[in-house]
Length: 592
Image (cartoon, rainbow, N blue to C red; front, side, top):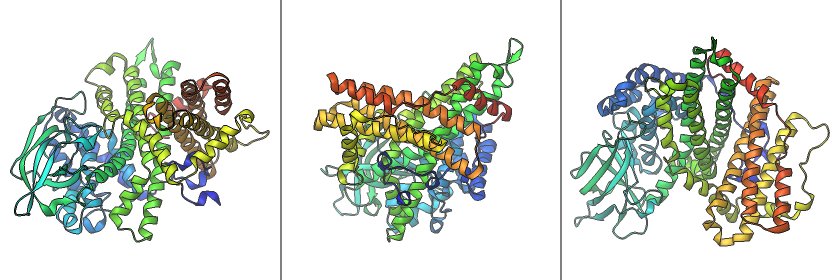
């Protein structure tokens, strides 16, 4: 059967997917739920009770709370048991990331430590390096930081100027340079530092301890949000780094950096779900208490619409996140069965799904910005007051579109990586695109008499894929190698691909849920409304790309095809939205 074979990254564009093959959050087992509850309890007892003090930039307090999370085992979820962790699956790691995402600045510090501050050693370190550092990072005895960005090297990370040269006795690398925007800088014990050795073209990576002479930590930056996290510059002045602290091979730093960024992007996609759920809960509870004109504002249709839209986007993001997380777990297991070293098997599996990681980083961060903005609006004037949690959520959210590579860079990566994977032979993107283009005159919406609900939803997402292929084909033929410079068109294609992936993930989740539990109107409302809205966004992005690429009768024919491929049945969004919101209002909690 076709869907038994795992999808490669980006291959969803040319293959059909069965609901039975995807993982959905409703399948979490009791151990996973227990880990999530432990994370939630920790936020309640240790983070929320100290949030005001953390917001004042108390480095010491943040360090203490982080270490407490380590003592509780929360820092070891992704670490194999032989290094003092719990060796949990990637799906479980993502659930922990989601749950702690409700922790404001703590979440940033925690995720930086557990992810980019620890996993480079776990994934790329040798056995000696792992034994020396990973067990202590897993318990919080040591705190980690990741030092890549420089004043003149942001998105173009490989242009960094930090330099290392071998000492005359060959025992140390002498490190000089400057790093900026370093999360946990104020209290991190271990720094993963990227620098070029001598005149190398590419980066290498080093494990640097904060107490090495010549390491100077600057004062914390004053930031718009995430004020509780320590963000500072670090200066390296003739720092002697033992040669045994070179991480990976010489010149492997850029590969390490990219691999860790892929991991950071997909985990950010989970992290923002937790922040979004927290904002939704704050929104509905306020709406269920606040009265205007003598009635609760949660009874107003305009408020219900806002609450429903918050839920729809969050549910969709969650659907996509756990779909790819299980794909990563499955690929990692396959790599291990092929005798790939355990650490490399995990990071190679994560890195393989670079397209989906970029999609979910962009989509998730923009979803959260929407949700927290609506949360402030639901709170009205109180939402603008620092007394309310949503004010903090609004400020904290904004960094996510910049973290882990800006959304502009990641949008371009979605298309660029998709095309490169196709050219490498991972899947037949161009052949399938040619087929769609060749049949442009006969394209229809594909509707068949008597199709089931499942057939209808999967037809819509199949059509979205065809449109993505069609626009990609036309742009590639028109611009050829110059396409890389047509960033506006690339952004259009990226938006089509992103909405297609999230739409399909949402449909697959709802259809699998129906297979497990039977039909549920609320979940159908979530899928119907999301796909209905996505069709409009996809159509707009496609038509913009078409008129920026083609002319005359060809452009008109392509636009007509776009109209047919985004044709979906009308949805009573008012009634669907009210049903979604009414459940939220009745539960006074997020229970989807």
